[in-house]
Length: 94
Image 1: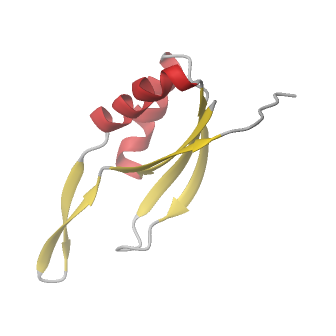
Image 2: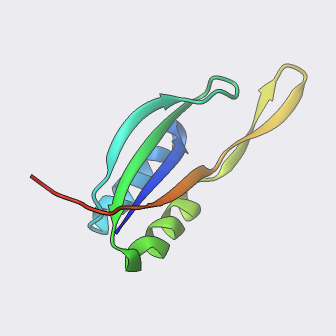
């Protein structure tokens, strides 16, 4: 079993959660704030079986897009998602 931690921009999080839940993946949503531009984002915790990792990661990749925002005199690219996949030794649902 793996724990996927994904940091997603607020503009993308609703469609990511909706799609994951439609595909029977449990998702825990944590509000968070990014350090860069202090932009809003959400951290998702997703527990998955090893064989479902690619499906979840592909879903996140498809739904999270980068976008340009103005930062002073320059446009910077924000968005997309940051994804961590961590081994889980034990899992219990109570």
